[in-house]
Image 1 (cartoon, rainbow, N blue to C red):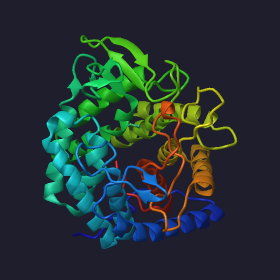
Image 2: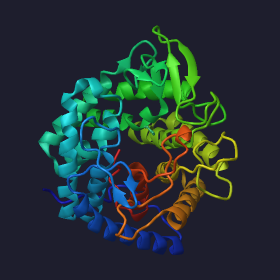
Image 3: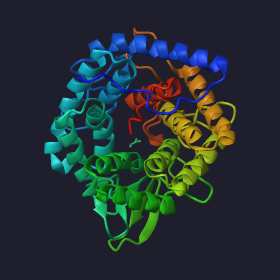
Image 4: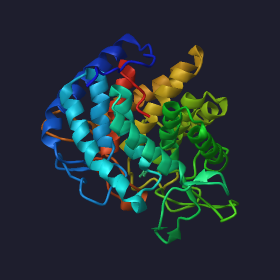
Length: 387
Ligand code: GLY
């Protein structure tokens, strides 16, 4: 296996005290994951109970099954430790089998195969992983609907709704697999599809005030019909914080891959709405437009948004960087102080995730851990841009 090549992206200049703190947290993350990784072997975690990861490696596939191996690749890229690569390979090979079960593959093939096989190929040149990544990219591209210019998110029914004409904001995070496929094959089809979807999302998912509709629906001719409440509080005008976070990180990633200014502007607009809703707490509630009680936090939204804010800080001119970086650091400090455990007696890092507002449950989520670790790898300058 080739040597890892983390550190390809700009390391942001941090205030001295923050630099020291980031270093300390990073050392804690690496120490913890070095102990946790061997005992997770054979499992693909989604959540944890009493500090012990569960296992979602059995069929059917879960959209989150890329995050554990993805986190292992991220740690391998940053440290070069073979343990992390071995754990990544084992967990991703369990997920690869899913590509044979075509009928269960939604747009989440991006989440599943970008930070796993595609990252593996980028890090080591592995041909098998390249083929898996391209197969996944073709599956995603095949979901594009010409009538409406969007990628269909799901199949079957979601709650009482048919999903034939549905796009969800989360798909912005699946687009980087298409950008990578164009890079790998030198074929612009994938990139064109990604941009067409991003433009539709910009028009219909993002509202004028910077808040985001989670789910939108088109009719068979591609005409916009309506938005649906999705995973946020049960009103059409809700503002599900993880949806806002997918929007921030997703649009800045489209900017990074295309350099189209409108995607940067959109990421900034959503970010402004997001941070304006954090108040003193710095941790988002599950929906910014839910009643004050009960208080349901979502640490996954916090960690995803922190990654997006760091990327915006990298992308904007020098005098604009401070605001985005300051907010990313505020969020990460609050996550670390109130919700994180870097002790190795617990498998998960973060508590306080929320799958959807209606669940009324706070729990550890593997994707909250992934984005928390990713945000610190960016601040350390170890990043390969996993997406
Ligand atoms: N992509 C599904 C979720 O964010 O819950």
